[in-house]
Length: 146
Image (cartoon, rainbow, N blue to C red; front, side):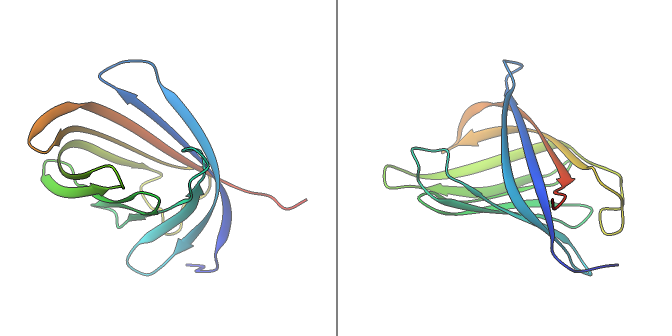
């Protein structure tokens, strides 16, 4: 396993309740560690506010941590209900995530070739109230230097 950081292009697609898919792209960095793979990228699309995002995948559970103008944590594990949180100036929300699917392609992210893909599907409750069903796809391509 090569644990040198790799510059990647992160593509994130999300769909809520079967509606229209939204797609965003970010420049990021992939870190392959012995027990997990990490992807870090910055989101400046929300009114030019800075939000650093870290995605951790260990082969069973996906964890997303956001820090900056918005703070949040969410975990996803197939067949489990997990607690999370979302904090901003305007709100402090408790999240409950019931994940039905978490799938990686290829299955071995620690050594697998690019592109790397993750897909997860979950139902979300915010402060105990249903907020919808979400399908998320995250793809990574190695950013080739010119």
